[in-house]
Amino acid sequence: MKRLFRDSRGVVLLLVLSMVAILTVMVVNFSADQGLDIELAYNFRDSLQAQYIARAGIEAAIVMLNNDDPAYDSADEEWGSFSDYAMAASAFLEGPVFTGTLADESSKIDINSLITEGQQEFRVLQFKRLFELLEIDITNEELEDLVNAVIDWLDKDSETTFGAEDDYYESLEVP
Image (cartoon, rainbow, N blue to C red; front, side, top):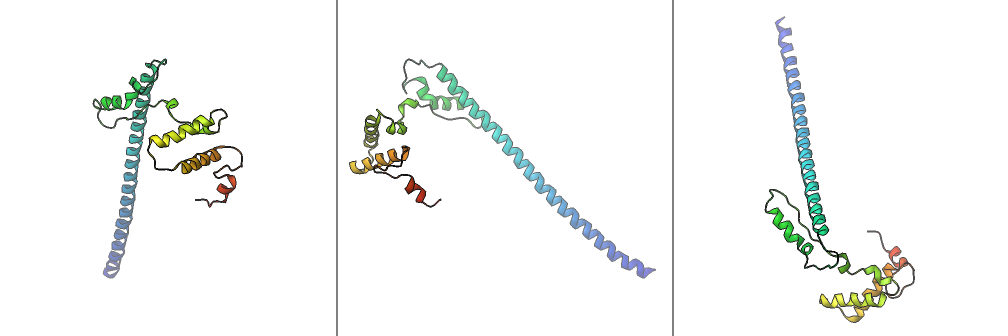
């Protein structure tokens, strides 16, 4: 009888060690899941906060533009200093803040107008003047080639003036 009892102690020890191993695996797994859940909660919080901050910036821009006099547009107006306004607003807020700028879309060069009939010559000159103002080191010939390449890229036909067309782009290897 004593021998039977002594043999069963080894079995009990194996059972206890097995239970401890299983419980350890369960605790580690549970801990990893909890860590992931906490990280997801932080990410959700940060995402929601970013959405509200972005929305606040958009609403501030809308208010500023609604107060603008449409008869006259200049970057010297209140909307032109929107980034300063955003910085001033952030001085009163804790945590993340919005930043941004407002720009008059009509002050930008529309490269699509390079292929618009009746505007081509003026837009080509405007494009060239931009490179001069930015003091980009480029020869007139290179600039002419660049403008022609942009025009070839924009137009719907497959006739090459000085740039590339569909056959060239289709022959390139997909990155």
